[in-house]
Length: 121
Image (cartoon, rainbow, N blue to C red; front, side, top):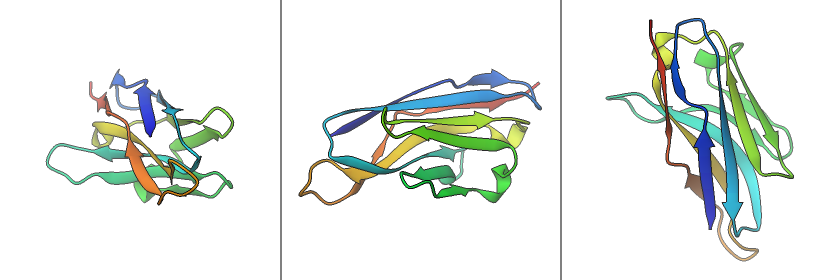
């Protein structure tokens, strides 16, 4: 199983920056994709950014040019640098990993516990 532990959320003023980090641990065969999702109150969880082990990156249109995802494949960590934050970025941010717990298993999603990001004056 994969355990994901996030850190770095908090309260920031509009225009400010935050950096989220996530580390994967536990017993697993491989992690193909790591990324970040967010869920605002009353809304569905949505993709923010994801990064495959081969380097392919996907960003939500709403964060392009402001957020940058990075990953250390050897350490199984992923980070999200968030700049020029807006009030609409306020949400619980969840780390996600998609991979295999063993050589013979089906791939599945794993989720962190979530970290609150609040953008407000």
